[in-house]
Length: 207
Image 1 (cartoon, rainbow, N blue to C red):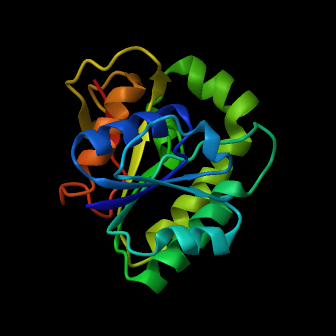
Image 2: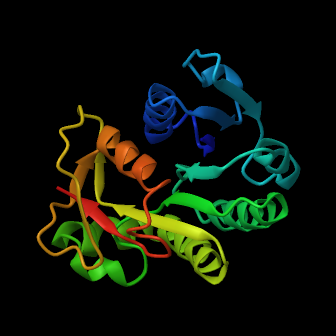
Image 3: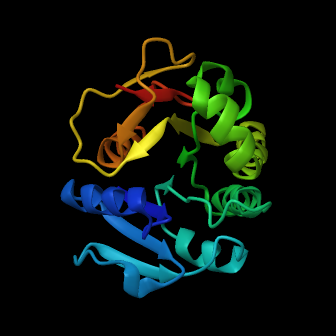
């Protein structure tokens, strides 16, 4: 499979690139600073571009089978980068006939905030993350309105610890721990590139 990874130099994106290559896929790593892509493989192509630049995304999209978007916020300030990226991705995927996208969102976006821990819901979300999550919500709305075969993944707090497996998913988050390792997140997202279990849904994931 030929997979375009958006956010390839981020903490989750790096895991995704490495795992995709390890599974024998052809990977196109999309990055603002190509030198930050540290993986080396004859099956890896690095494309320089910006999330807000539709032309660079279009160049990277050519020949792809699917998209894994692990793009994270650049700051906590009010921004529309997630919304713009999603608008660009949807249009470009349509132009190139690419249907499957696995998108990284967050547990707490939209009505899932009610199932988050007390401190997150009443302290971190309103005081620090409200702008980021508002932008993610707008991007999600565009994705839901498209005709793409999307899986919109919503993990809780992300850790840089080694993956441990045992990831579970649900639509309401009941019984799930509100944290997980980025390595496990990348594994789950890669699995959704070929699974139909969560197509056109937004699963919450944890242990």
